[in-house]
Length: 452
Image (cartoon, rainbow, N blue to C red; front, side, top):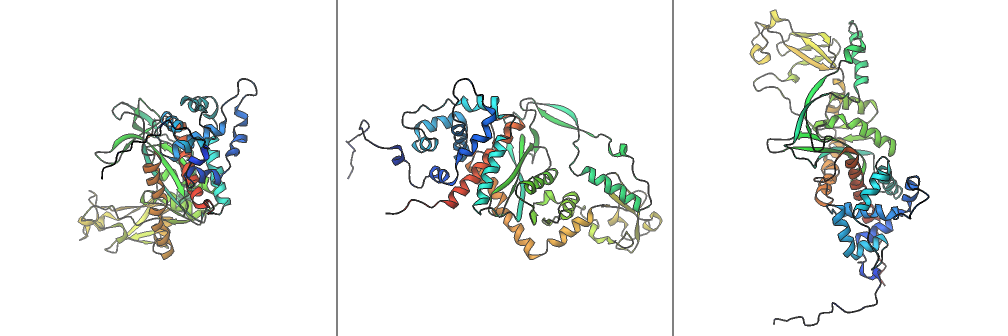
């Protein structure tokens, strides 16, 4: 039977407390029980003047931003609209029914005047992480590293081409020393410092809207200005550290500073797992040199079809030479300033070899093989890859760091940004990952209301 509701109680007056309107298991209750936000006061104490009009409570400001990032609200303007009508949000901020909610521009003005050049958001992130560690939720013996692109607030068609100097890699000084030592060990003169210090340049596309973003190309359909969020997570999915770079920065360049940050703030891990983009001699050498197991995947050879694979040329460590499938020696010639030892065959022998067409297309019939000075570390990582415990660690990538990025994009508004500039994007990254850690910590430690 069709029933029509004739009793409309829109004007009914009730005596009710705001606390009664917030569900017992609402996320804001779990968060309020998990952490005391008063830790923010000493962090911002030096940013406020002791004279003038009273400010808005800084804890309220930070809680407002947490509402935005916890619930994936797309802007602060929309967040304020939600706070005005959502009783749970008002309860979380400590507002009553009739308290006036701050204007949406309030946080932006405070950011520009007080927070912009501070480390406030990083400090908040690490305070929440420390609280999770205190509760025994962090398990950082295995660290999972990866990056994801966040679409910049910039039109991909508005750019200017610019020639810029290539950035020096974090390990470059260490590599230069290794190269000169290797040359001396082979009886060759070391390179003078100016040989390494020669500046190299590249042409890039620079956005005229957001110059600090980077042009990112994934395939024919995915070309855009973006930022890269590089993050490290533990086996429980807690984010242990993050670094934001332009979208055209290669993942492998950031692993070392990111792991250093994890070591400084959390402690040295036993193993670091990453995908194929991180399988480089520098990363393998860095991790093994710090007694950290590299957990890296198999990568297929990039040899052209129809040609002999590099592994078919056997490296003799004792005599420091390669042996080709036909039995000829490729002897050491030099070590380049890029860090590669070169081994060359004898052309007079190669020209009559039956495997020549599968070996080299060189006009002088000479085969050249390059071996990085840190190739031993890559081979050790490849050896470790076959161990059962390493396989088990790598299998958890999809449940940890990949899950972090998936949740960040689907639930916390991390797919694209309306902010511009590295500083603001770093703030967004710290707040997003802090919100995700806080949400996980609150859910895992929630006891729930007592049943009468």
